[in-house]
Image (cartoon, rainbow, N blue to C red; front, top):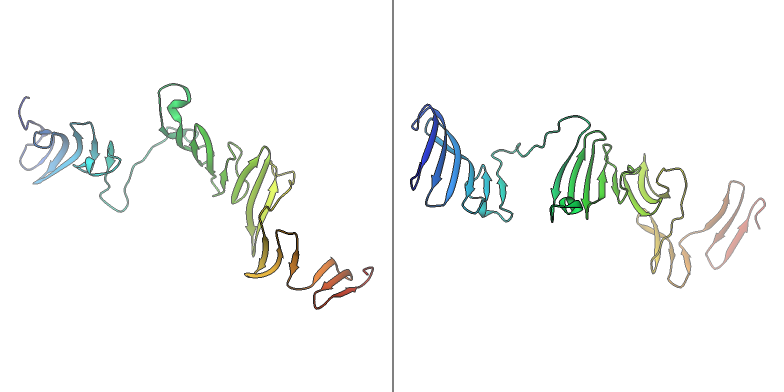
Length: 238
């Protein structure tokens, strides 16, 4: 069919009823694929002369990233990537070429076997969200064992976790079975309880306590209290 605004209809008819159509819009240089029901005409898929595709919109070029635009028509709508089986891993890839790792420089992937969502840059996973909601940064294929786990070196991780009434930071191995050193490195360090400073360490190494220091526990302990200078020992203290 050769015409300025050619149409091909498949169905009950071009006026009323149900039908599908393929139409060339010579004014906008768009190819439409749509359907009609009664007097309503829906331009479901639009392809512009420059190859831009719109689904649910007839003006994909109105958007910033406009090579493929999907416009939702309700509050519960979107795009689905359906897996073939419960053990598959599905991807959205960002490529810079067609060979080797250039094909998947950036990735968003979902592993259905482990129910894990992962983000990759430079062809390597950098951030992982486990099925339990734990977040890992740089943890690779080893699952993050804390609510937030950061891989700081080979077999060394810093984790943030918590329980009923408390939060904690730990430094531990990848397999969660060997404790590692934890270093706080800053010009000054301050520790607070309920947002009240209790201990501060200056860059010069001075440690300032706002209350007494207890060394040991139970009946055998030593107290140092700063009110002038007050040192008291009990049990086997001094």
